[in-house]
Image 1 (cartoon, rainbow, N blue to C red):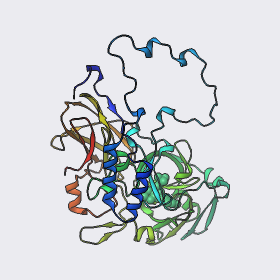
Image 2: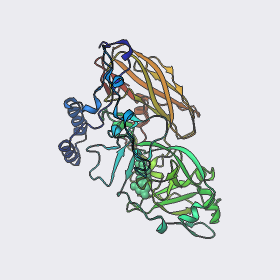
Image 3: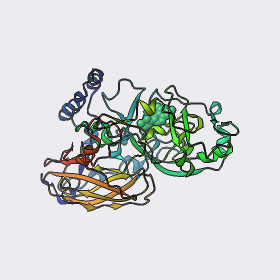
Image 4: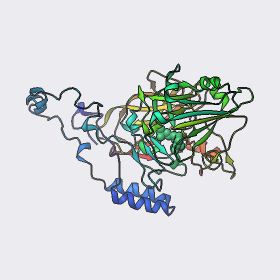
Length: 455
Ligand SMILES: Nc1nc2c(c(=O)[nH]1)N[C@H]1C(S)=C(S)[C@@H](COP(=O)(O)O)O[C@H]1N2
Ligand SMILES: [Mo]
């Protein structure tokens, strides 16, 4: 592939955000119901191959190689006319030109849209904060917009004085604001056996990162006179129909990190994310971040609820199940170049991505462009925060030959992200949860980027 002129190097065509039309989605749903999981992969592949590039994604306005540029020479309407007034929209929205940046449902993954998941468009985001409207969603029984004046939080169990809080009573207590990622334990879960999905959105988009505001759970427990010696666990319960109940170890709570949160990115939580109250359990898989939080019970042993005994367990190669594996281990993903994008020219590219660890800060991220033979340290952009997304960047000159791009994160405890060979040696291939393997993107000589597994 040859660049049309040197200054044009590094041009990139965005990933089509969805590969399937309505009919395709219906077929894949039906096949998914019949248990044909590889149908999902094949359907994605076929649709991707046949996909016409939507006009909005094409390079529609190139700079002419000779003569003047009409984009400069002809004064546009926005230079000559009067713009829109203030408060045209009391709550602002993204530009209409960004309408393709959406959270999306993976066709065929779930059989209903209420017990389902939508993925955040990681390949289109900058920095570390996920805009609240693009935060991934995972609901077990649909979402609700609950009237905060009617919402109550009960604290009972091993406490001196059981308490019921209104939202007002919680929000007048001293609160803290902290940046943390939340990752569903099933993120990247479709890739255990082999490559299944085409883009970073679907392979890694069950993660998001926000500034959360709330009251440390320990404060509320102290107010209720909780027995912090014999009371070794807290059960958190949500108000939606999914009976979402999870055991939280008191050791995490005592550190002050676990929050009863009402704020997300400077405003109240979004309904999809648990409005008006959710638990924030930094470093722990998403399922423990109970939304629509209505009850906390102090006890002396784990409850082994349905979402701890039947779901959210890891099937090990010896056939046994591992329970209460809740920490999200060190992980990273390159978001550009990533699956579905097309490199239009040789030359300079800023390789960028995200790294995180449920055990603390990211210490370093190494990037390989040759499938893991050679590694170079990427720049970690500030801030680098504990149990939070960290943005990394590294320069790359693409010579037009096939390249396999990978990132490998190390956290402050010394944990290093494994490759697939290392991970499968311990975990096998039949798990769903906690896949933190190194992701590989193949840049083909025609510039198309594909999801591959090389080790
Ligand atoms: N009440 C309630 N809390 C819940 C869930 C739910 O279905 N109901 N889903 C859990 C799961 S599995 C995940 S991954 C996170 C997802 O949070 P989000 O929808 O804000 O991304 O919420 C968790 N808390
Ligand atoms: Mo989840």
